[in-house]
Length: 105
Length: 120
Image 1 (cartoon, each protein chain N blue to C red):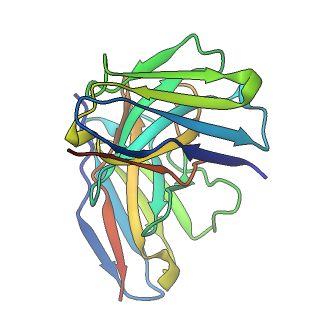
Image 2: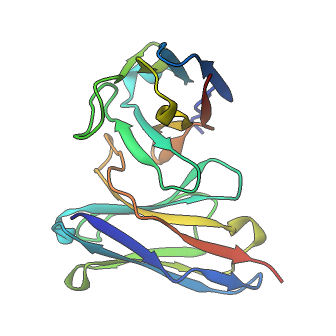
């Protein structure tokens, strides 16, 4: 079955750029989506189809996907961006990565 | 306002059954694919099941196939998850969410979730 690999945690200083990776075999051939989940809340879609932002998501959030790695990039990180982030693809079923905790220093 | 509200969670013994419901409002439910996603305590997200707008196409995760049944009633703007033969590992918060059809398949509106605890 298809697997997605994310780092357990990423730390970034306030105002800097955070990059969260999602690894998978030839993931560049798939559509990758990203969700943000804050403690005690439901997930929120922040990027769909590799690089598209839903309405209401700040332009600071962007995505890319190529080869075996997809990346969620958050520019000018704010304290409110601290959350778990999950990547997701479809491979005969929906598959989520294990999640990455973004810590803002 | 687009809204999904889950209900039906609770405490159930291993081997028991539970039916979750998800009430939709603020959008044309009958035109939307839907799915269930769960999250065990302290764990990541796990996709459970998908149903097309008409109800004719359904998918399940291997972990629930044969035990869970997804259904919908478009006249009532409602999504359901019938869960039978429940196990301790089914303990989780269960979210309903709108979905786009495969292969794009992303979930853009989520409910707040309902908690299922399987324990004796």
